[in-house]
Image (tube, rainbow, N blue to C red):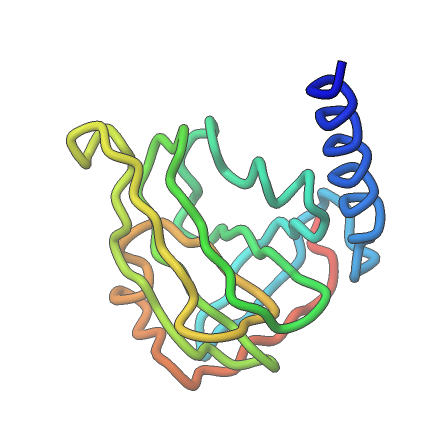
Length: 154
């Protein structure tokens, strides 16, 4: 009985924290244009706990001009893993509208001997952007590049 009670309390606390992490934008699943340095991406926003947990897991590859942007309510250290990913990624760690760190070529499990790769921000961030692996190098994205969120693109 005690185990059931603890489990239910755990679900209640987890659910409450997810409910309190409300969206920090007014965006929907419609992509928005996001500019990073000179590069432009059609970007899906993930700004609540449920959406961030799923991310790109289990999906097909992004197009070269597509990205996913995870928005958090405030700066904090963030970590991501490649569980159930079908393609490798580049990660941009963003704080206050600028790239503060980059992880390139993070391998999906099938390309990593079945191991689930994990990456973490170099410091507190308020956004994380995922791109197809190789896009950072191909587009010359670098630390310090400005990140500008645009309008919904249809």
